[in-house]
Length: 135
Image (tube, rainbow, N blue to C red):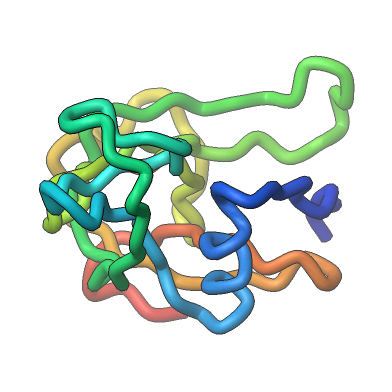
């Protein structure tokens, strides 16, 4: 079982973690210019507005890049595939790809993925699976 430390959230990203517990992938949206951004920030980098709103992502996109990550201080921890996903709505998110054996010789760039939510001992995290793959 993977051990996960609960996230430490603040005013700007509490909505994201609360959404995850409800199995919703919420993305911050500027209330003035509609720019989507992740991770959440206090102010829009495009127009400077602090009118922050949220929108629910469909949770699908493509893998832009990925790595097999081995924990640096826990050598017995299982390796994992860390991915950068370009969501269909246009913003990006870093997460893990699950239900795929982590090997370095895979071709994962441009593969379609879908969000899923995994409860790691009370901490719910948005993770991704290859599109169309159910576990």
